[in-house]
Length: 248
Image (tube, rainbow, N blue to C red; front, side):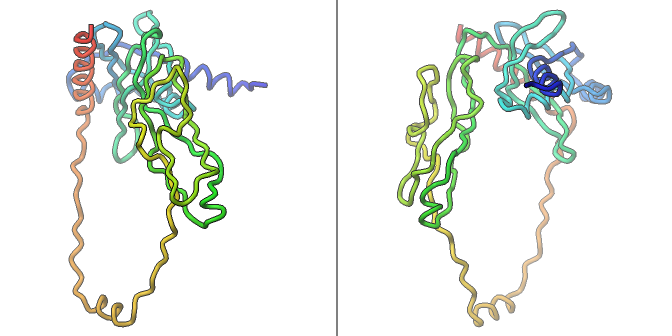
């Protein structure tokens, strides 16, 4: 039985309200954030790109849902509703708050190319019986399908995985309505041996202690300027829009 909380969560991730905004300057982006919203760009479906502002809490609920950024939701803008999804997002590097997102209008009868997470299921025989370690090499695969057929994840059974055997993309469960674009020979998971730590000999320890230590170099990262993400987002939107027109 669904609770009130479940219903509220379902509503939160099935729709997103967007408001038109001015675009182009850092001050505009800062003003949007001061008002509790984040700048965004909407494009796709043969329509021109549009700068908008959205509620970061709604966006966070979508990104943290079971289907994540592959969630298809109703986008409300200027009294019109259209299907859309989040195709790019940026976080503030220090505080971790959302800075900017790109939204793409979706035609439900046209196929999409998306990245879907791979989830390993079961306990590998190479771990249980041989004492190895299960290593997941590939965590996402690129697929093409209709919007309504996008899976939230692709499960891979690793219960029979042992030393010397590699599970590849071709071993993932395939369906007729989903085309895998990632190379079929790409490794997904295998069993590796446990590395034993060898204690250093007294001579090696003494030599290491006697060696002069090099000064620590602190790398200073270049801080991201506010508003830079907006310009990048709008430029990507224009390129995506141009690419769609070229396809037609």
